[in-house]
Length: 186
Image (cartoon, rainbow, N blue to C red):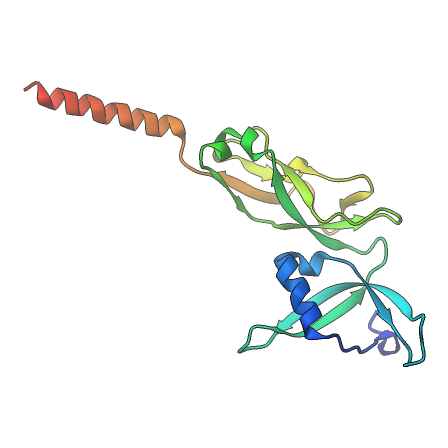
């Protein structure tokens, strides 16, 4: 909500934020942190808030963290979870030097209460071929994690597989040898 009474202004040592950014790079805003807020200097318990980092601002010259906003996290709130490839060696295209050109690097998901938030979602690459369009059905969702209502499952694209076909390279190589052999007989 935008209720100003629910806002808390905090000062976090920038070295802690920079360390997390160095560790998690693009995935920093996909992580949930437990942030303890102490009411005063005598408070030993504090109040723990589960938060998501948002809108990381960097210093224009030094490229260090300048400001980070945190949103309260609660089960059912959409969270962007990064996608990683698994079983690339089982894909004929990726095994031969092809690559997956990503369209979406994250999936906005809802995690049920009591379910740990996954660090990543796995994209099953077994059997991928050149020019294949990779869709949502190849993503492995853990139990209790599902795409949010904002994600159109039937239209969601992860990426497209690109690279040279091995058959084309072999055909060209044989054609060059035949031309070279034919030219020597004259």
